[in-house]
Image (tube, rainbow, N blue to C red; front, side, top):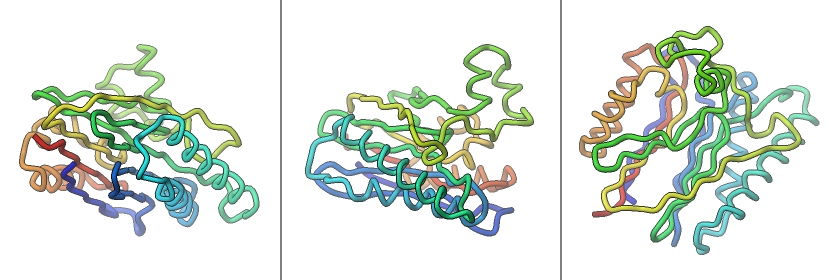
Length: 234
């Protein structure tokens, strides 16, 4: 796939706790990880998660079991690291990954980073937010409008490395020519509506990436911002 990648510290934070992966191979692999757990811990957790995925054998076609194994390994290593190093206690990370096959992609997802698919002018969020707000939305307790200003919208209910065990969402999606994918941290989606995302994702790829990044910065840039845009060849 054609790619356009952006990452930015934002307007408030002093360091970027997001990590990303764009690894080429017979079957390329892409990922966004948004670290949490203090200044040092977030950096460490997201980098460790991405490093685990980077060790995968990309000569093999995408497989849910192999990708799940890599995420679980990342979870185990981060959990042990924060257990053994008090200064990293409580660290963890979101992780949203896309492994590209010839005719399909496999998504792995934990946390509240997101994967979107734009196909035929229709934008669909393909991941479910593992967050308090996500759970309240799915139960109907709050509306999408209420969610944008909900005081606890940044509470993540599932993350890599925060518990000894982990349940990772795994999804297979068939590819179609000119599909566009967006993997992003919540530093973007805090500010971008579905309409904003759809408009940007129909622009030329590099312009779309610039537009999305600027949208988050103009909104306030209170968090780190990371996005990977992908386009299937026509």
